[in-house]
Image (cartoon, rainbow, N blue to C red; front, side, top):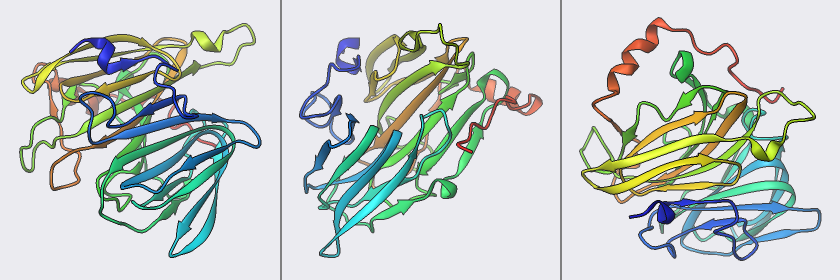
Length: 298
């Protein structure tokens, strides 16, 4: 398949009030979804009742989610954050069959996966979210594991976000999760939603020019080839194949939101490194974690 099918610039997937909307209407896509929207004061974004579970993630700004719970209406206020580089945010998990609406000011993401299995709705406070400093040296990055199996009871969704400081590499070594090998590898579609920003705020810096790089390449499960300069709002879809690295250009921090789900009976993130590069992990114990981490919203 061509890069055009699996990599999308900001706005090219816009519809129904969403700046980007990914779901099973895209050819070759089945298990995951994502909507990203910009809201101004007075705007409201509908979340119709459907057979899908959702995680509402404030990217920048604060939001109120009105939703039905146990036959009644509940309003959940998400305090949010100034930007994705300000540390973790609180999030809201909504089970399948739950309708509602989002209002507020800023940019919000809604991760989805089709399911008929119900789990309890849950507001996860920012202080509860596990912050993982993964890798070391120039491969140091910060992971917010708010929607992973250890942190959240969900039916299928696995969701996290990653901050990569300027000049560093993440999603590295390149890895895959496109075969069902019990205890070793799971089958998961994956969405990467990107944002980039200058690492130092200078008035003369063009924020729209901030960028990183992202690569995906083929595995025995399928042919794929993405080598792209990524900016805020861009989306990469990974149906199969080795993916990584995601590289933050010097001078610019890189963020991505990962949304995963798949057909396996177990909800698990199990990966296989590209065997040519897995040795790099053995070098990390001798290196310190990047001193710029963690980024926090203090």
